[in-house]
Length: 124
Image (tube, rainbow, N blue to C red):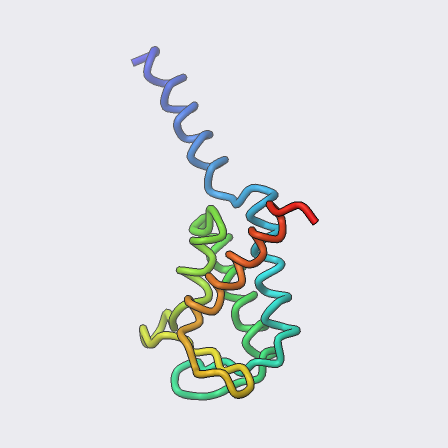
């Protein structure tokens, strides 16, 4: 039993440490939130269209809640858990930008993430 205690403490510490997004993921998440804020797009949540600023406020609150519960470990988890669907109704969020067709917010955020990662990795 005495040998298991240090191992158990290490496992618990490692799992607690791994629960928070790393610096790169935090930058990506921040970018995605700011990208939505400056997009001029509208955001549909539970059947009601909202301006981007209201959507950003909602997503930030949801993100903070998920961080407190140690549920967001990376950017994909942020998109999946905070920016894809309503936690209460299960209905997907929809994004509408100008004359472009409406699309699921998961698709919109994933496209923005791909674009960001391409900018970061491609030399200019």
